[in-house]
Image (cartoon, rainbow, N blue to C red):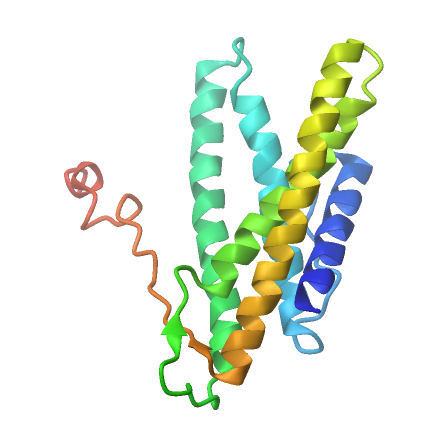
Length: 202
């Protein structure tokens, strides 16, 4: 099933990142896009999420230098754009994969595209990883560990449900019972013409 492949790659990304555990480490995709395009995109997607997770931790330091915080905010903005672009690349992959599928009479559209559901699955992998660490953190209280274990079990159940929903959606698209229709995010705040602040700097 597709979700098994995605979850495996996400775990691989997190494990690879944690070897150096630094936002400054170079990125190297383990999958060749010409040999396995979707694996290449999934690896890149989760790497972006993993680095951004670290960014979000760092910027919440109450003692962070304001100049450094502004620089980091710009990096987070760029990461968000990269994340959105990668999600759209993943949807383009699925659009191409199912381009010859003829929807059956009465076929319906899903409320979100496959790639945006996969986006949530990638974030879940990070939540699960970090919550699991909290369940065994030696300097945490026993009540904290138990509370986090309860949360971890909920996250694991959520991943099971979301994985099943993604597999079902892809099966429905491949059989023509649902069809894909993708809308670009059209983010306005990075556009020189659509953001009034940026427009005013010209």
